Length: 350
Image 1 (spheres, rainbow, N blue to C red):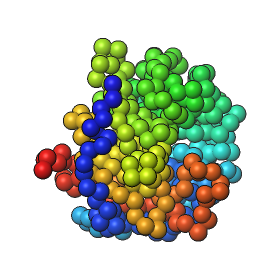
Image 2 (cartoon, rainbow, N blue to C red):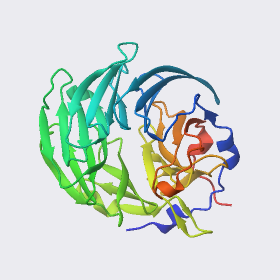
Image 3 (spheres, rainbow, N blue to C red):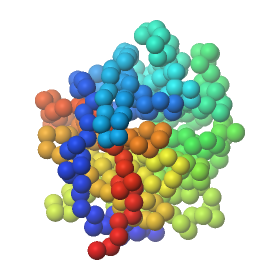
């Protein structure tokens, strides 16, 4: 079922508050594809199309931030995905060079190759409970890796190219190019537990597993988000809603990322329109919508930190309109938003 009132809720865009968001220095030379927060500290990693992984330490005092660049690592191709180890000591990254690398923060900047695919690696996650890394690739496979071995622990053949992947142990969800969602029980990682057809009509762009591992939220290139449950008995609670659309011009933009706020039903979505929004999936309400600011590009990705007090997002061109709309002078920058109680509160009807 759809829930039309969800996506079209009349919440005034908080453009003025987005203007106060903090720009992380320095700007990045090319599009930022992914970001990841350390699970143990306010350390942020980003992968970009200039073949680099960058890390910053973020200091916060209320709504004020200061970010200091701490490390930079190089791949041989654009970096499509990043992740941290459970203890926050290690950064993992996957690239168009078909490899995944492991970088010890404060260690050797050359890193260590830990994975190899036949095509670019689109998604990477560290599974702390199994002490392994999982990679999803355009070669239509998911592979599990012990970082001490050059050979995968297991390889699972999928129906099509991996477009997005997320883990909320023991659930792993993998979205493929044929609009399938493959669900894994990571206690039996070499077997697909269930395959669901995405309720979204168009290509899946991003996916996020529920914190309680009962389902997932997925976003499409059509500016729509679906909420789906793995358990067949709970699927009567599935629904979808519209997001990142401009009703004044009838423009539709891809939903580029989804991030859950702590262990709750509240989510953030980012869009190629340059806006981001906070929603409550359980109440089916739009909480706060932050409109695009002048002189900034669309948003390619956004993530909450572990405490939910900071929302980091990257403004970069996502190429959905092709090379002819690429502006080499536009800024590629990570911005930090202080998340307060008002951002995450259902607004009373006026």
